[in-house]
Image (cartoon, rainbow, N blue to C red):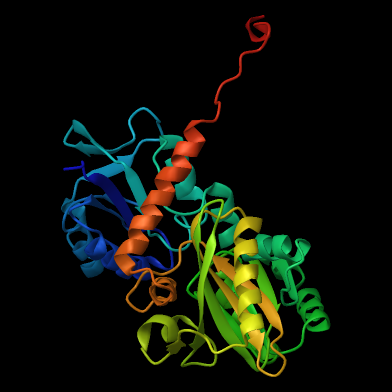
Length: 374
């Protein structure tokens, strides 16, 4: 019988999406085939403490009993490739074959965790440092997509320090460039955390205050009226493929945190009813955008489509999409013909494939002369 791969599933974290991560991790851990994988749950508390045990997921959900769990962490050292335990002075290593990061948002989806995994030389699911960082930062992503000729909505961005110094100038600049309604967003959050839809100046000031609690940089985007929200799942490394499309009909005025996870009233239609040429164009754009920001493994690409003219805008890419029971990424692949468990298998295969390719690269260079000794 083939040796089982030891999969470290990392979840929780220092993020406004901590609770979403716990639900995604529950689905993944419960669905990984135990005949193929030995699953190691690795939880990170909201304060940043790393713990690993069979009960860590339930402890994080209950927010109790965490202090009694021993600390475990990844060493940024490529010869160990293991989860390190430090308990009462006794140290032990638990080697990991692959890590499956399921931390949505900051310190997990933004390239920071990916950088640690690169240093540790452990294969991991999903985009690398660059793709993760660009996928998380709404400003950098918009700039790259715009410069590579993707259709994006108009936007304005600025550091909050600039707004604090000259608030009237910033508000006037927003109103000169954009028309209400607009969306005010922290540059680096997901799950609509810190995001507000704004219809007039009074709401704008409140929205800026809310967004500033999550990031030092703010982006304000033009709202698209009478548009459909279309999502596409992409899977692969250098040769990615796109799923069928789905349409989200949010229960609230926009697809905010409550509409995504809490009230259970938002609707998803798969496949989305779109003209064939429009659907084909969106799927093609999703793959091109995936490549443009150097994604790997997976991403969910979100679009707006005008109801009257089928005009397309690329909204954003999500490099660690939700994996809850109601999340679109897995549902889109299921409708395309790939089951949840088969999707997890494929993501792990892609992680190993990408890591094997990197191991072939040279990491040293021998100069003609030992100039550095002098």
